Length: 360
Image 1 (tube, rainbow, N blue to C red):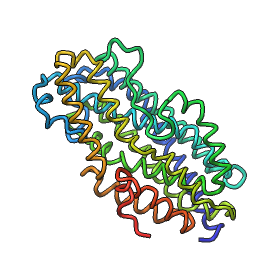
Image 2 (spheres, rainbow, N blue to C red):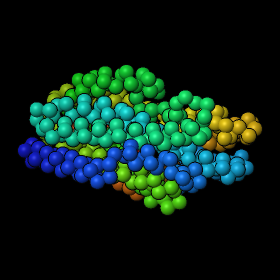
Image 3 (tube, rainbow, N blue to C red):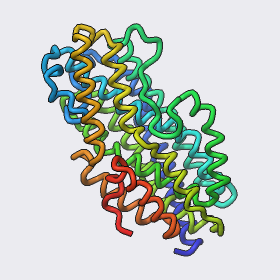
Image 4 (cartoon, rainbow, N blue to C red):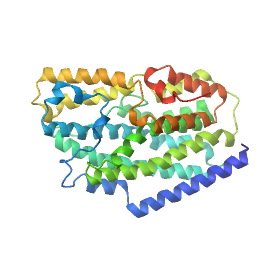
């Protein structure tokens, strides 16, 4: 593809996507406003929030879980929602800052792309405020002794959210400097894959007839935003290196280090196990379960999380696999760096499934 054609296509996409976002917000209002109503609805604590198969720790197959009261089982389901949306929210915290660094080279080339990322960052701020409404409701209900809502560890970057908050700008500036024109492509390739991973789950929540209608509506409107974000990731990953002047310096080792930073080894199991450890240790809802029994359940969950993460969830089998295949194969990286990207993920059993359908 020649540069002029790529410029025209990306400019057209950016302007169209901003209009779609503005129309959606004009029609429905902010996600935060929807969440404010959703998480104080009369039926909020009477219904499950997510389908039962979301728990990859397979807690429901353990005798301790089977001994739970109906209220405890429902609480577990609600807290599963909390885990999923803290993971999404942690990622969006990273994106709010890094979006702008990833497109800074477009400022004088294609301002519409910068405007699009400013709009998407605005949406991410709105999303975080909406998720916080749900997490605060969970805190009041299941962790009344806590001053802050329970958040999982960040899925990328440093394990500490406090450290990440300080270092995000530095990470963006350093990545732009060291990776050069490959930074936008790698960033949006990574962003796209991570969005694809949760998309099937969010679709399921949005269509979950047993859930409170407000909770399902939050997921529905959020997935509309994320569908646009998936499109943005695909377009920029595919077109960026056709638009920006290619630089001669390419370091496979440096590029692989950036991929490792985006997908730290063991982090996916760590944040899930850490979350459920805190739930079982500190929530009064489960205080009636003897400590040895809680420990046995946690051990069961930990083993299953580590095992099940080495394969895609049944809900991810089609959408995630095919979307990942497409974005990687179309990404405008040099053959050397594209191979490095895929080989780096395939070297880790937990991340290998993300690119198992990719053909290079």
